[in-house]
Amino acid sequence: MSGATTASLDSTALSSARSTAPAAGGGSGGRGRFLALDGLRGIAALVVLVHHALLLNPSISSLYVDGGSAPEPGTALWWLTYSPLKLTNAGHEAVTVFFVLSGFVLALPVLRGGFDWVSYFPRRVVRLGLPVAGAVAFAAFLIAAVPRPAIERFSPWVEERTAKELDWHLVLNALNLFNGSYKLDNPLWSIQWEMIFSVTLPVFVVLALALRRWWALGLAAALAGVWVGAETGTAAFEYLPVFLVGVLLAAKLDLLERAAASINRARWAPLAWAGLFASALVLLVLRWELGAFGSIAPYAALLKVVVVIGAGLLVFCCLGARGAARPLGSRPVQFLARTSFSLYLVHVPVIVALRFALPELPAHWIMALGIPLSLLVGAVFHRIVEAPSHRASGWVGRRASALMAGIRSPNDR
Image (cartoon, rainbow, N blue to C red; front, side, top):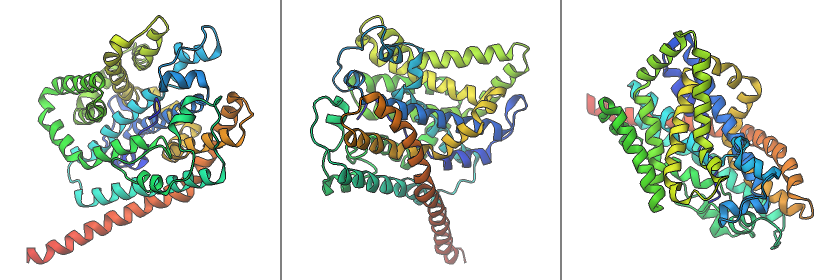
C-alpha cells in the first residue's frame, strides 16, 4: 500500500448516526455536531488527495516506499513533510481519523437500540460494493486508454505500487472486498479493512458494551493492540483496534457530552477548545515533527499509537466544540463531505493516468492539474455511481427485512 489512503468515507453511516443522536451538551444540536463530523470527513479526504498527489514526487515517494532519504532541509518539500504543513498531506493520519469515525458512526445507531441487523448486512455490502465496482471499471478504462511505459524518473510509488497494464485477473481480484489486490486502485486496501469491520460490527458492539464500565481500560487495550500490530507488522492488530476506539467513543457518548457541556459552560471555553484542537493536530503529526531531528525508528510503533490518540481527540473536539459546526458545516467543506467517498475511490487512477499522459511535465504541474481534476471526477462519480448505489443499498436492505418478516410471519401464527 502507499503511505496512506482513506478508509470508506461513507456518508450513510453518519446520516444514520445523526438521526439517532440527542442534542449535544452545551446547547448545540445533534445536527450541528454531526455536520462537524461530516466536515471532518471532507477535510480528511482532501488531505488524502494532496498526500497521493505529493507521492508523484520521487523524493516524497521514496520516504514511503523504500525509506529513502528526506528532502533537502529548507526546501518546499521539506517544509511540507517536517513542519506543521504536514497536516495538509498527512495521509496515514487521515486514514486513522476515518477508521475512528467509521467505528463511531456505525456503532452509534446499534447502541441506541432497535437496530435492523437483517437490513444492515446486505445494505452495507451493496453500499460499498457497487461504488468499488464502478471505481475498478474506471481504473481499468484509464489503464487501457493511457499507455504506461516504464519511466525511471517517475516516483517509486508510481513505478512500484500501480498497475502498468490491463490484467483481467487483477481486475477481478480488485473486486474482492476482503482480501483483493489494490494495485489497480491503491486506496482499495482500506476498503478491505472497512468491510472486515462492517461484518464483525456485532463483535465490536458486544466488546464495547462489556467494557462500558471499564471504558478507560478498553481504550488502553485498543491502543496496546495498535502498538502490538505496528511493532510486529500484524495489520489486523494495527488497524482493527482503531475502529474499536471509535466504537468505545460511541458507547460512552453520554460521558463525552457531559465533558463537552462542562467545557462549553466555562468562560474560557474557546481557549480550552483551541488547546484541545491544537493538541489533537500535534499528536496526529508528531512523528513527522520528531523525524525532522533524526530517525524515529525505535519509537515508530509508539508514535502510531499517538496518532490514534490524536484522531480520537479530534473526533471529540468536533462533537463537543460549539464553534466547530460553523467552519466544518460550510458549503465548500460539506461539498467535500458529500463527495468524499467518490473522491477517495477515483483520485489515484486520475493522478496516475495524468502522470503517464503527460510524462514530460514536472511533478508539481501534475499535482496542480490532478487535484482539481480529481475533485471534478469525484463529483461526477458521486452523481452517476455513488448516489444510485446509495439508493440501491436502501432498496436491498428494505427487501431483506421484508423477506425475513415474511419468513417469520407463518411461524408466528
